[in-house]
Image 1 (cartoon, protein in one colour):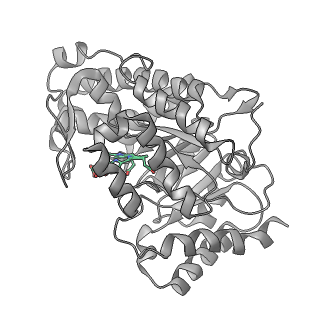
Image 2 (tube, rainbow, N blue to C red; image 1 turned 90 degrees about the horizontal axis):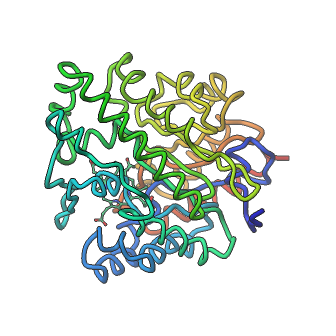
Image 3 (tube, protein in one colour; image 1 turned 135 degrees about the horizontal axis):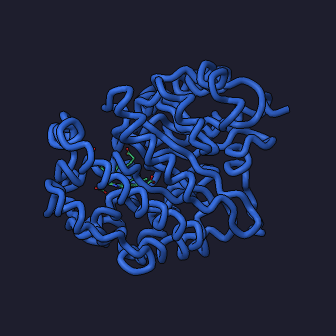
Length: 354
Ligand code: 1CP
């Protein structure tokens, strides 16, 4: 049994009583912190930072030194999995991700290997072990992966996309090929997340950043089905403690019941969803994570506090809420904003837990 000094985040995900609402921030390690930029410069480039367990640990801990966060998230990227499948990932200075090779044929899918997490992705597991050691039980560590659909968009498009032309063409004209790819990715993600759990991740989250660009039937068939397969394959208890799993589909507000029915412990929400409505729809089955618009952090402190109070009131009394931004923190928010945000959540949530 792992003893944690602060286990509010894990307890809230399991809808167990807490003294105040826990909070962490999506992309809490990143370029909005000057010390992150310094460590990244020291590493040379983004992937070298991910591959160096000590530096990955350092940037994971940086936001926790500044803010009273209730969880740490592994510093890595969702695209390490396709990289380990041989696609050759790089990040140019100031640019998004690029793959040297893309998936454009049946043979390309068939030839994709399923990476052994303790071989090709061992650097991630080493980062998890190092971070767990250095956290010294202060707060839990979140492991993560991309959803098969979201990973596939990058692998087929060759990088970031706006129109998703190639993968949608594949979806509508060669659905069997896309299913083959997604099924392989689901197998790879199960191995990858279970290895993170064995290495020390105390909760896991699946980022389905691009599920929201799909049509209704296509979301269920090409994104949710494979997240469900992952949920069914995950280790759900380790060292005598439950390992909660959170599914986050950006733009997934229309499919909350279906997402909650996968058997996950928590559903991540973006800011298009009203938390009170989401609680009424699925709060009896799962915990909710979210969901302040990250752009609120551009506003003055009083406006941030007002927004936090509104979201806390929307959720109302009781456990089952992990406060978070509805997506990643922007890199140019005022330095004081994250502290105002985190402290307001802890302060104003206490009456809801009496
Ligand atoms: O220049 C830099 O320093 C790189 C910026 C950066 C960072 C800080 C990238 C490149 N990845 C990360 C870390 C990261 N990525 C984390 C851990 C940090 C933390 O949360 O504290 C996590 C959880 C991710 C996950 C991730 N990567 C997602 C899913 C979440 C989301 O933001 O929607 C996605 C889609 C990616 C791909 C990716 N990696 C990096 C960028 C710039 C992108 C997005 C590209 C795009 O918009 O298509």
